[in-house]
Length: 142
Image 1 (cartoon, rainbow, N blue to C red):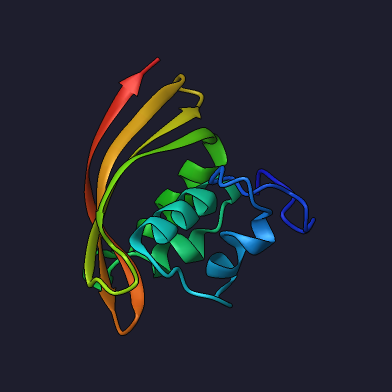
Image 2 (image 1 turned 60 degrees about the vertical axis):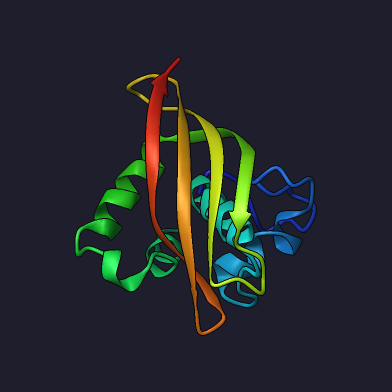
């Protein structure tokens, strides 16, 4: 983990301005599922930031999970430092919707160089739980 999330005043990596334990923390620890597609996207960004691999796998649509995901995500979270998240737009994805899209930019640092990930992520809600389905992404070197 890159941040100490045991402190109740540690700001959430998703940059909501809220403490982690009152923002993305409950979704990541399983005590309160994300209520919207954007909330799931933010919690997944936070999970990448803090190295919550199990949450990243579990919040991916079951049909898109691969056996090697855990190992690949572990490696990625250990070498990537996520710097900033900007939500660019949302389409549907409210608590009453069954699908949604979130377009965002996430700045990062890695041994291969700094960059920007721009993605339009697609989400689906099954049995009142949101899942990341897939996304169209673009990596931009800085």
